[in-house]
Image (cartoon, rainbow, N blue to C red):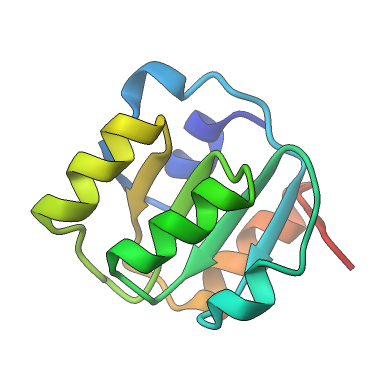
Amino acid sequence: MTLKDVAEMLNGNVVSGYEYLEREVEFAFSSDLMSDVLTIQKDNMILLTGLANVQALRTAEMSDISCIVFVRNKKVNADMLKLGKESGIVLIECPSSMFKASGLLFSNGLKPVF
């Protein structure tokens, strides 16, 4: 599944990383605890979170996560946008709850990390 597919499926607003929307992803992980995210080592993974701050992007950077979906209508601020552009991480704002967004992605073929 491409990141473009993810954005469309979630009715998401891509705010950064348009040039990377053709990247393929295979796994998704949903968490607001960045310490949990750091324990996951999977390639081709996206992160769904309601934690809209720079720490989420730093965590994604360290974990080689190519896309963050901010659920529950969380908005990307200027610092996050700058870091997203610098690190090549696709940032998507999503109106759905984490449960709904995760369910949509799972039912359309994205795999859980465990």
